[in-house]
Image 1 (tube, chains in turn purple, orange):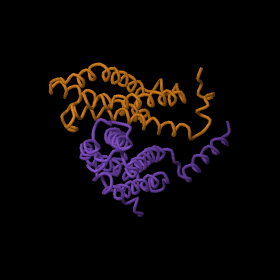
Image 2 (image 1 turned 90 degrees about the horizontal axis):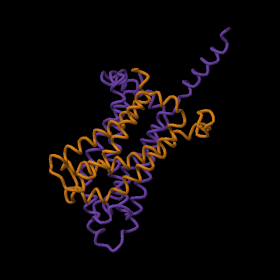
Image 3 (image 1 turned 30 degrees about the vertical axis):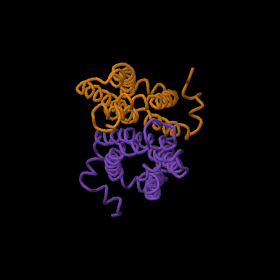
Image 4 (image 1 turned 60 degrees about the horizontal axis):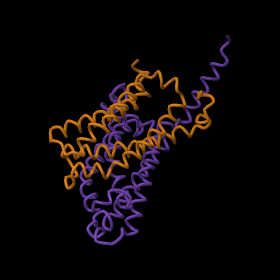
Length: 180
Length: 149
């Protein structure tokens, strides 16, 4: 058995896949988290770009959203891992899934790269007369990664594996040859 | 009149998913900013500012997100109006969306801006969150509803 088959054969993963109700409920949770916590990422980025919440200090915005972004990230990743795990065979053959995973890794790299100079350095940013370019670059990259993740996530549902496509066209061909 | 076959949105396989991505981004912006105010009303976060301050800060972005959502949504609808119109989940979503928007700009707005009592604030925030989660639920279930009805 391949790894992906093993993953989706785990008891509750199978239950998840076979339940008509749980899968959409988890999708709803996943998407609601995108709104709530993705929304906070958006507002943090827009603050760093000097576009939103300009009356509040960067420290206030980054600091107050931080805990919630972490909580949201955990829920979102848990939901996502379970959704992907329950259909591991399908997902592992899906290029958009791997695109999304790549962007997630890049998001981690982004956090590591800009942590010291931007996100943990807000007091310094607030002291400066203008928001430094580095912070604006961090925010712009974060926005691009964020939108890329949403797009990849959505496109996962549109990918048809080659054999599925072949099977469908075969059925169509067979159907077309049925004598009327 | 928009007929599904004559609709230019159906000319390419990519337009629908691309619009969906924009729809989700607009939804994250609008519902995300609404949720931030709701969190404050619940007393859960952003406590350095009052709910009124946050609501004023985020108001324009909520509106911007709503505009994106209400622009892309009807375009998505137009790709297959018959299917959506008859889809029970879509009908529920539209009712909840109307309720959520009206609630947002009447009772919730007043509550956030006037500094209401904690109990009232919390109640309003819970209703707001429930309505928006309901809208998401309705949206997701459009694709699943055939399995139940």
